[in-house]
Structure formats: C-alpha cells, structure tokens
Picture 1 (spheres, rainbow over the protein chains, first blue to last red):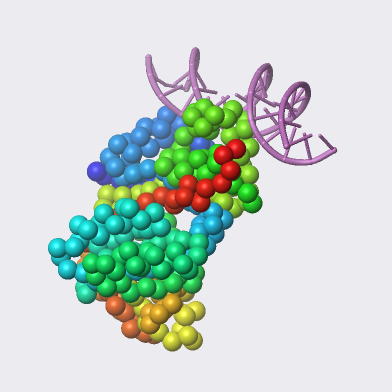
Picture 2 (picture 1 turned 30 degrees about the vertical axis):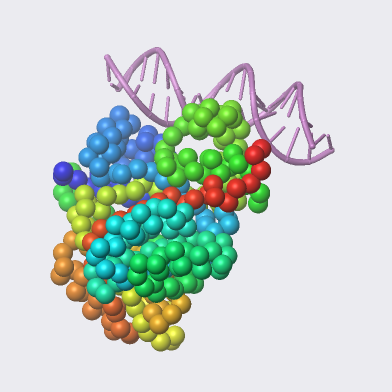
Length: 152
Length: 152
DNA sequence: GGTGAAACGTGCCGCTG
DNA sequence: CAGCGGCACGTTTCACC
C-alpha cells in the first residue's frame, strides 16, 4: 500500500486527536471532505489505522502504580504465560522478546499488595524481575512523517 | 472525582472505539445524547480522558521492527537521556524505573541498521541492554470496570 | 460538488435528593 | 437549592450520489 504525503499528514493528525471532524482536517491538509473521508476509510480498510482509542489517565481511575516485569521461562511454558496475561486484568501489555528474558510485561494497579499477587501468579512457571515505574518519561506518537514519500 | 458506573462504561467504550457517535453510545448505556455529551466533557476536563488517538499498524508504515532497551546509568545523566529520547524519533516510549536499570525504552524502526545507531546514541552515557520484540503478545485496554463504583 | 440524514452544542424545563 | 437528565432547536458533519 502506497502512502503519500497527505496520508502521512492524516495519520499524524489522527494520532494527535482522533475525534475531530474529517471536514476540518481536510481543510487543513487541503482536501475536500469526501476526499478525506475516502482516504481515512481506505487507511482503515488497509489496516494502517487499526482503531481509535481514548487515552485514560491511570491515576485518575485509581491505578496510580505501574510496574515492568521481565519474565524468564522455558519454551514449553510460553503458552501458559499468554493465558496468564489475558487472565490477569492488571496486565496491560506483554511483548515476547529475544534475550535471556522471554516476556516484558507492563501492569497497572492501585496498591503494592496487588503487585505481590501479580508476581506470585507469574512466578509459578519461571522467574520474574520486577521494576516499579517511577514515571512515564516519554510517550510519543508514531513518527510516520520520517518515512517520507512523494509530495503528491 | 467520583466516577459512577456509567462513567466507567463510557471509558470502556471509548477505549474500544473513540470515533463513535455520543448519541449511539448513549443509547447503548441508557443516556440521552446531551447527557452523554456532558459526561464526556466532564471526563475530559477532569483529565480522566487525556485524549483520543488513532492506533497505527507499525508494520504498515514501514516500522516493522521493535526493540526494548534497558538503560543503566548514573543519576547525573538522567536529564541527558530524557533529551536523547525526545531527539531520537525511533523512540516511542521511555519509562523511568526502579532497580539496576534506570530506563526502559521502546523503539520502532525499519532496518536492523537503524537499531545499531540508536544503541550507539544511547550507550554514550551508560550501558544498554537490547532485546528485539518478537511479537506484541498482549495489548489490552485499561480495565476501568474492575474498580467498581455505585450502580447509578 | 451537492444533498438528505445523522450527529453535535445549547438553552430550557422537570425530577430527585 | 443544587445536580443531573431529557426535550427541542439550529448548526455542523457525514455518507451517498
């Protein structure tokens, strides 16, 4: 799928604010409203845009604590862990990675005691290295513009 | 700020799809469109909803590779690193954490050679442990419902 | 590019605690 | 009396032709 410069501008804008009228966005980019609508639909259909989500302030919903867990296990337990991740509501993200650790997991919770039970649950089939998150120092949108493309 | 059950339903729904009419959402929850609109505005004003963003498929925009970097450094270099993170476009997220490592960083790029230059840039003031991401195994919305509240 | 339908913002009123 | 929800209106935005 070829993405021209206008497509990249659209992706950039929708990452900053997904709830904005296609009309106003089109005016800024230099596209009529139906043209904008068509491009966005194509980006969705092509899977470039996977969806739109609200960003929630974790602290404001009572999940003021976060931790990063690194999990080391053996290959036969990987499926186990995937199920565990899905079953534990505090687990927000889990990535399978290379290296000595198999997974890196982010979770959010309200009290230190919750972390204890999470670690207990995850340490059954492997070893867990736990780090508390002090601050979400950087959080950026995907830099689509750096890829460039034609100026069409 | 008190969040009742309807607020939590709204947060849950807007995480699944931020681009949906407040009217239809209100109909599903059992609220008129103006009432929905007012609640959403309050959630935004209170900072519970920080914003709305499009989720982009990294592979589809040419950033098919991801890596997790753990950075170990001394306290005096922390500010340096924050600047570095902001300057390197491939860096998507960086969290300051407890433990032997100071930061955990996620970056996305298109070729292994890009990772080399990222690591080179970040290893100047500390040591970097690099793991390639094999797959984003789990990615969940924030579980707002688990906090409960009145059934109003 | 234009048109009908749907969604949004606002003001006013009624209910409830 | 204050807070919250519903109705009605004008305006904007959307989808389709």
